Amino acid sequence: MMQKKLNRRRTLVTAALCFCFMAATVPGFGQSLAGRWVAVVRTLDNGEQQKSILELKQNGNDLTGTVKSEDFSFDVKGTATGNHFELFAPRFGQARPFMVGDLVNGELHGMQGGRRPVVEKPATEADQVVTVTYIEPPALHNVPSNGLAKTPPMGWNSWNLFAGKIDDQTVRTMADAMVSSGMRDAGYIYVNIDDTWEGVRDANGNLQTNHKFPDMKALSDYVHSKGLKLGIYSGPGPRTCAGYPASYGHEEQDAKTFAAWGIDYLKYDWCSAGGIYTKPEYLQPVYQKMGDALQSTGRPIVYSLCEYGMGSVEKWGSVVGGNLWRTTGDIRDAWSSMIGNVERQVPTAPYAGPGHWNDPDMLEIGNGHMSDDEYRTHMSLWALVASPLLAGNDVRTMSPVTKSILMNKEVIAIDQDALGKQASPVKNGDLETWVKPLADGSVAVGVVNMGAEATEATVKASDLQLSGKVKSARDLWAHQDVHFKDGAYSAMVPSHGVLLLKVRAK
Ligand code: GLA
Image 1 (cartoon, rainbow, N blue to C red):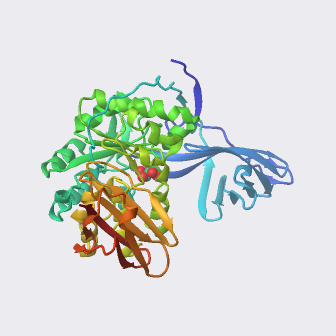
Image 2 (image 1 turned 45 degrees about the horizontal axis):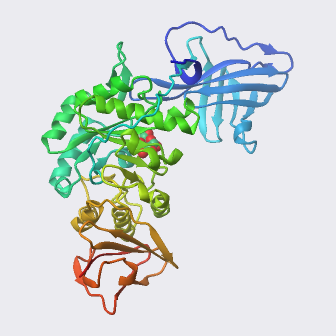
Image 3 (image 1 turned 45 degrees about the vertical axis):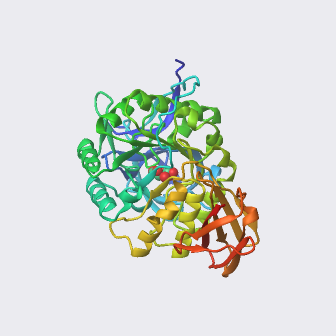
């Protein structure tokens, strides 16, 4: 295995070895700002501190240097006037300073990006950028199908609502609510813990949980006792997107840990892997590695790839053992984000099917920043494109409207259709029409009104590639049968709303 040292941007605090920094006086220029400075960016829930190190040189008024941290490394330059300094990062443009401040009592006190207060203290020798051993990705082969996710996975995920504020107790109450609300019985089976559950590795390299998750096995037993399944999160880099330890160099070990905890679903998020594996051709072998590791545990674990669609993941996601793969960046609870994500699904449509799904990201339904019409459109589109349905709202306190959207059984049935076809849009003015063939020979058709005014939509039977004339049709939001007349059906669709029909041929 070829190995090389990479300068990874991780800092360690270990011993109190003193780095002999002393601010010397530069004649005529006040104190020198030269030296190594360290700032705590934030403290993680596992007790680790994310730090950045600023190395500065001073020549008269001129400052040059570098900023290194876990996630980045870039050059800075600027000026010192007496004890005042301004630093720019040429990589980010010269429009505004990266950091402005003053040397106060041997510390640099400043603002980063004009708004974030930062205190840089003299760094000790222990404040180092960690080097990570480069591990060559494996040769490619086809990972056999794990036989899971014959229809798009359904469940709940903690990230959209809680981000870093998720813990054992919240997951338990959410699992309770998945049952009492009817979500489980509607098909939402997976309860997925996203980022920030991670602790540190023990002496044997086993990844532990942090204080928010005192006993992951007990939690999975609890979730399983409710007839639900438990999902977890990691990534192929040394760090997750939120900065916690990820599975780099520990893939098999972590897969075994997850299996031992009783985990049923893994979301595997690229993030810091990009700092190590810089070429697109690394994506596939790196994801294959965890695909193999999961399968070698012998436990059925749904494998969710999260790399935002890079390297045409839809073309190789299934041969690395993936059951679903994100095709886009993160969704936000906003119409433009939701529509943008689903529209970016178009090139991926041929690659969806039983066991392997394109994933335009989790649901935002019920999180409060879209209208009910927009949420109905969100649900309809996710069903039409055979997307995973992972609720991202507080299922403990859902309004009746949110329940009626997430638990519309007729719409869920479109998503879960056994044929597994992914619809694509046909645009006509403000109207977008998405047609999805279904296993029983009928079709689902959704007409979305992208415009600002209510508009009449007309669905023509001749556009639906039916095997014969329309026998019956049903409006899946009104929950009532409707009638095609002269081969067409028309209805008013509110702005950002949807007309969703299931149409059966004779
Ligand atoms: C990335 C993913 C999100 C979420 C966060 C967690 O941004 O795309 O879905 O998992 O990381 O840090």
